[in-house]
Length: 373
Image 1: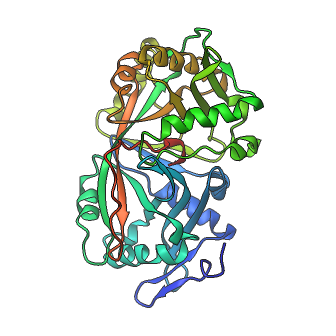
Image 2: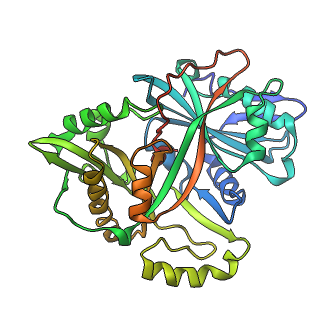
Image 3: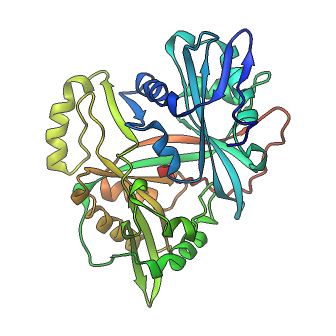
């Protein structure tokens, strides 16, 4: 971290924004836990027991904490940096995430305004980013209207497309003898297949051979968690089953409406119908990620590969696998019909500050890696 990035920015009326340190971990984790996302199911995206462990999985991640002059926590955000494909070329991109504001300080525009103003000053290597993007729940119309309006000194959010995140039931898995676990000698072929696939999408990450070879148990991912399908000696499908539950959890914090009463009956039906069960309030969802998926255009074959991948999820003591697909992905409807998943939709938006030019994208569909978001 540079010395400049560690300097807190101070606004006399509101307080200060500073790069979070290890001592702030409990406060940051509490803000994630205490400020869940509303919906039919209230979900908290938590980072326990070490808040900062999730930020060390891929690329660089900086967390910023906002606090009053007395040191009371007001809110937080994160800014992650990694290489992604833009218009078919690898570019350094920034991803904004984890925006939370404690209840007592909501509806105070100055915190939002000053928070955005702090990002270019506090995020390391911000000037290297070719583009900044984020994700916003598609049905959060109130937030989208505010952010997309580009009011005053606030940055302008522009929707670039929609992602559909699927929770594929592990019970839908079936072995077809198509897949094998990756070995160290497969690393170049995995990266090449992923590159050819990722270049066709906006914000797909660049997969690096050195990162793959350097995976450790701290990542919750090893090379043998990558699975390959080959034809005539060439890989046609690859994907990893990435278990991040040791540092990132999705926890049910409440159910609304009829779901409050129907959850036990739904779960009984879900077990018979091979659907994804719903956890008790306070329990996490037991899922792993299908990450860095890359495949050829043979849709029936790819569905069978996904089906076989799901057969390896239950032994990981998980009930579902999370797969993010562009709303324009040709596999999306086929996967929805085959696996009957739960799903939610998010808008992928570019974020541009008033003194910046908006990025010019060439119309390729958005496809960031949901395991990194």
